[in-house]
Image (cartoon, rainbow, N blue to C red; front, side, top):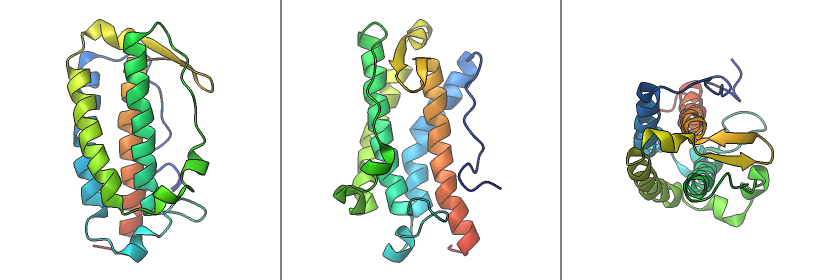
Length: 173
């Protein structure tokens, strides 16, 4: 198994059905509690263990998810209020080295609770046609909001699996 992609690489769906979108939103809604459960009971030493050789620590993963999902939240909002805005990419690896990436994971877990609550309330209120709105990512290209929902549902499960996979491999209960 490739520890970098424990659930496989993201595959953008060719089309998103209303049922698929509902599943993506359910995943996004559950993500904060699933991350909280994934790190529950871990010691500081365990939180500072990389999920794979050369990978981020569990702590960095949690802070990365908060960083990434904040950026995604803004991208959703930009696409809903502007015509195909170009969004700014960021250097995830450098962000993971900033001083706040050493904070207790609870800081980012609380942020994810609030952020995902707002995100899901916003997305569940949209009309199906709103999910066809797009933004341009300089490194990826044009993404509609259906694809972004799919991506961030995958992203949530992907990083949760990094943590739960490490727990399983290390025998941490």
